[in-house]
Image (cartoon, rainbow, N blue to C red):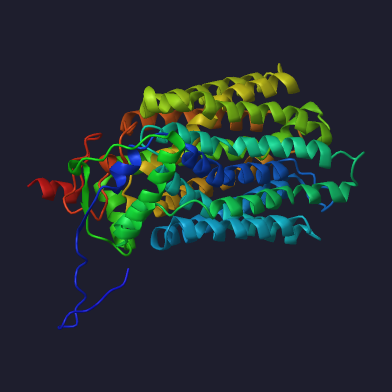
Length: 504
């Protein structure tokens, strides 16, 4: 947004503009345009699941001379890279726009993942896992924002949850790929895992082409002094929708417009004020959901192969047969349960998914300690638990994205994601150490039981302090910081300082 100065040398305040952009986007029917958004942006989670599955399968362990703790450390380093990437690119997404970050972050991931396959030693692998994590972390912040801003409110919950859940489609793909690449009959031990690292870059190159056709978020344009461009973007989207449906869209009444004063950037002090003073309950909910799901997933997922190998004697090349149904269960959870977040409600579904996942995992921990499970029954328990946990974990990103103002959405996602991952990054090393050489079930049993209790607690907190934001426009859940007359936030008792002042 360009700036000029007046005769006194001061920078004049940008003029307020009235816009129908949000209302026009939310009233659109589902068409091919929205499928393009889903496939073009949703690939990020497929790539993330693919990457983590390759690490979790530890096919490189013997080739690079790594022990169990170092395998866990490889996962931790990848997560640390995600944290740094989310923080850096999350702020840039709010400043530069969503679309510019699509190519940048995906390109960084492609380089890191491809070079990881060429690793001559453990240290180089660690460095490339960090680079790949940078790209994926940036994707989480920018893409969750774009999805929620481009998808109509009627479908926002199920779409966001389903897209986040495709992480497990990538994990399933990685599982099948590892059955082929890690099979000693097909490739030498030092070759197969290297080839597996190139699957993601090949898929990513295709997605770069698709993303060129996804527009910038009209909502972002509207709040950054680019109303004309925002209107043109919506015009183009509506033209695509009308062509797909063969029907003319009804005009949007002027009383659904929003008046905003464009903002160039949001200072850190203002962000802190919104999080701590204006919306403390929402901050607690977002942090709790992110931390609990991150810890649970990183604890189980990164040490899945180690547990099967050390306690049940499963060979490394056979781990994929147990992991594949686990990944499919995680994929089905968001797809089957996602629409209920839009119909039954956010808070109820979060309590249900987090709660059942935690209870089932806790029960399995006690049975594991009693040594009454085998590799198959252990996997069944994990499949059922994570069927619910996957939908709940996906809703964590939805929750954080829609509960805070548009102008700081990507940054807030990056902060909450980073805090969750920092806590979660401890889990792979911790649980890898608890597993040890498989001679004592006691330590890891306590770990499984504790992770289940933590997940259950997360669901309870979200139910008590959460927001019923299903099927509501983003601007009705939280007024943009640029709004001239902040409206009353009807879904929760909290009121910001701006909104209280506006009503008085």
